[in-house]
Image 1: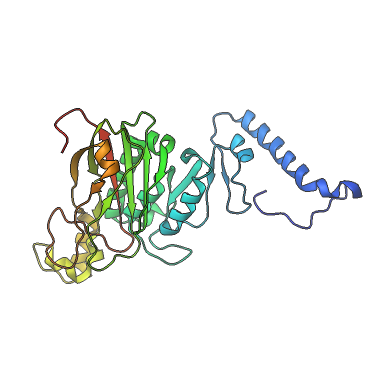
Image 2: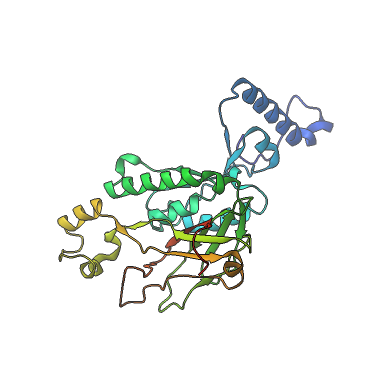
Length: 307
C-alpha cells in the first residue's frame, strides 16, 4: 500500500470503470484503516510518505503522524522538514536520530546535531543501541530528558524560519509567547567567521526573556591532535588511552546566558558568542565544526532588569 501504483487493471471492473481504480483503491485503503483504528483505539499508527508520497490529510485522519522521508541525513532533513512544515503541523512530522554515518550520502554529522534537527517534531532514534559507545549513551539520555521537558513546545508551538546566510535557523514559539526554542544549524564552517546576530520572531515585544543554550557535548575524538591543547595531559591521538577517555569524557560546549526584551530580540537581535577561529579558545567561545548546531531555550522572566 505504500508505493506508487502504475498500469492499473482489474478483471473485476468493467472497461468503463478501469479509470476509477486508483480512486477505488484509496477508498478501500481508508475503509481498512477505519477498521484498524476502531479495533485498536489505543494504538498510535504512523504512516510513511517515502514509498508512496502519502503525507496527506487523508492519511493523517487515521494515522496522526507520518514518517517524513527515508533520507535521515540530518543536514538533508533540514530541507525536508522545512518544506513539510509549510503545510503540516510539527506534531505530524516524525523525525529520527540515525546512525553515525548517513546511509544516503555517507556524511558524518555530530550526534548532538542529529538530535537538534530531529526534535523539531516527533522525536525517535533509529540506530543499534548495542553498538553505541558509553559517550553516546550518556548524551542520548540527556537528549531524551531535554525533549520530554519541551515536547509540547516542539510539537505544538508555532514554527518560524529565520533569515540566514549561514545554514538554517528555526524557532518554535508557544501560543502564549512565554516560551520559545531557537535552533541554529551550520553547514560548512567558514574561516574567520564574523560576529553572528540572529533576529528572532514571534515573541511579545513587551515581555522580558531569559535565554540559555542547551547543554551539549562534543566527543574529543573530533578534535584529533588538537585535543592535546585542551586536555591537561598529553595523549597520543586515537591511541588506546585516548579512545578510552573519549568514551567516558564529555567535553561540554560553551555556556551562553542573557536576558533581553522581546522588542530587542526581534529588532536588534540576539548577539551570540564568538566562534573559534583557530586561536585563543576560552570557555565562552563556540566551537562550531562542520554541521554543528545549537539550541537556545527562551523563557519569559520577571526577575532582574532587561540588559
